[in-house]
Image (cartoon, rainbow, N blue to C red; front, top):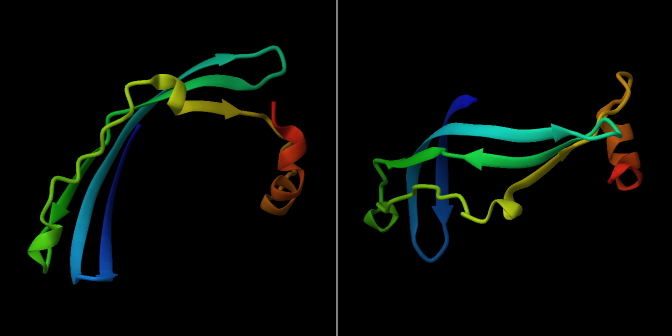
Length: 99
C-alpha cells in the first residue's frame, strides 16, 4: 500500500521554525488468519520521509524512517467486529476484545 502525505510543522521550543515533511507510506501486512477469525502478523514498513525547505537550518536533517529490524516489535492483530459497531462502542469494548 502506498499513501502520500505532506505535513507542515510549526515548532516553538528552544529553537523556532517551520518545515514541511513529505512522506510516502509504503507498507505491507504479513498476516495469517486465526481460528477465532482474527488476523495476526507483522507490518513491513519501507516508508520514505523527507524534510523540505526548513526555515531554520537546525531542522535540515535526514528524516528517513527506518523500521526496527526485529519484526516482533512490528506486530499487528486485527480482530473482526460486527458491522453495526461505531467508534464509541469500539472504545467501550476494546479492553474485552483483546486476544
